[in-house]
Image (cartoon, rainbow, N blue to C red; front, side, top):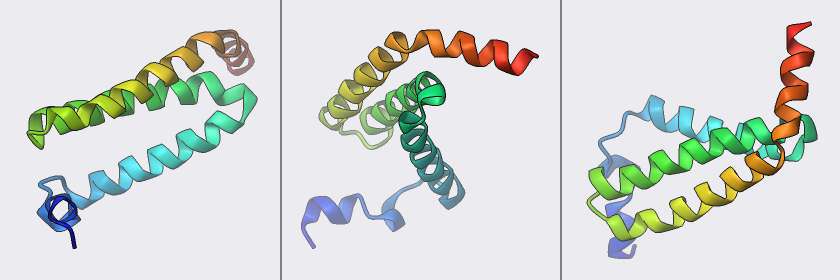
Length: 98
């Protein structure tokens, strides 16, 4: 196994397994939500927050700030999607408030 992969192995992380499972489920739910037109803005906003936190984890916990650039690029893309689909958020809010 390459050295870089061994450093990122799950047994070397200090993050609890339950949190890793929660993050994985949130990412899958966000990916599915991006494909549902009514939930697209909400899913994109959630994924944007998740990827900003991933960048912070790479920069501050893993001490590899260069690895945080890609999650920040993804966060910008997700934020742009959420901004472009913001009308669906108001539709969803009015639907749920009835």
